[in-house]
Length: 528
Image (cartoon, rainbow, N blue to C red; front, side, top):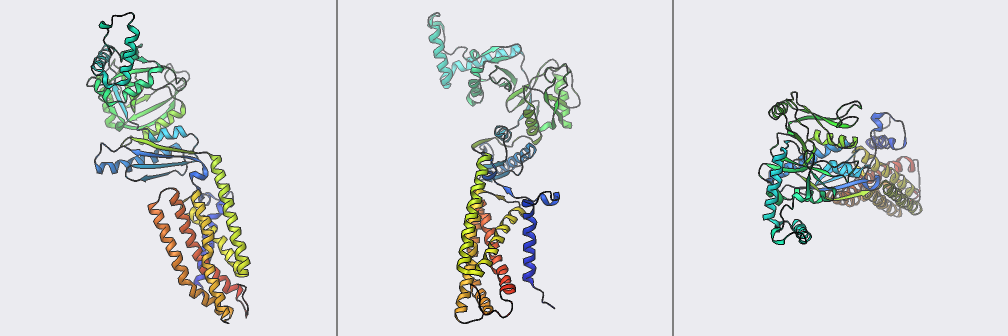
């Protein structure tokens, strides 16, 4: 009875595992439980976008800052998952930075907006017209008294004074008087801003110094831009600064489409967001609508007014609609950010990189070509220099490349361009162990030993050196993985997997082939 071989069992397991995870790459129409295991391609190979984000934790404590970054990562991941991007990579860098990689994404602008949107949802009362007018007049007076703090407005006031100098007494025209109100004009219900002045108004609204010019208890906000006519004038609202409800009161949001026969022009044949409040939020909403019948309630998202409907009556049930001038895609994105909640702390993009699908395909082609050239050169060298033993080493080399790809698939790792470089490097390093072993075998044969004895002695004496050299490389790869980021990690993963695979194939597979095929019978010579 043939003796049980642990070496043979390990080789069978090695072949089965490698074949199982490589099969989906070459065999179509496999069962779903099998085909779901596929090799992930990184951003540089597949194309897509990479965004480096910085979390603003300046107003948070150290403990809250750490929690804010982790929570923001969780919220961003939920948004991306609902957006439909397959296999995104989201990781923390340093103390307050987040790296987001979205392979395969094509709508770059929509993806970036979805990620960075704070999604601060608030319901605020709109100030009545006479009250809004008094607020604007107060802002004018405050700016006039502090005109030197607003260089752009001061320059505008200077130009206005020079224009009016010909028709108005210079002494009677106070510089800066009514400068802010000159940027807006009364509309049907609110104020209007011409497109040419929108950028300036946006800059002012984002200026903390300008916020001090606004009377206590009020805030200004523009309405959402018209996507169909981006150069259209915008409405400017005067709102109560107190939020009657917030996104925390929201239970869920979903996109719906108004009927073409609807009498409401805001939703007729248009997408809108249907929102449902939590139990406590529904109670708040009912109280607010009951106490403010006849007034308008603005729905504000990230400081932009999406709609400001008039409250006709008390509304029970906690249901409302967000209507606005947005497309179906924008409505879907808005529903996603509302459902995933507010970002704990604001974020801002530090850098954005976009890699086209064509460039990714070109990287795959060039990387594959480089790998094949390297493999062919090593294969030919081993055959020419070590003859039959070199051919056996080449078989192990091919198995090792397959093992690397199989393990990347098994562990859900991502193959990147630096990863391909790691595979190419591994191809050269994988034969190091075989070279050491074969040289030892040659030395033993030169001493007059039989092929079987030479093989046993060669493996035994080279084993320590093989372990030492490969172990140091594995340690270096592990350090690279834990201290590196992105491409460096991809290189480290393939390097470590390749080294481990090459050790197994050299020590176990090659030894088994030599024992069971080359050294059968009473062979007196060994082709090495």
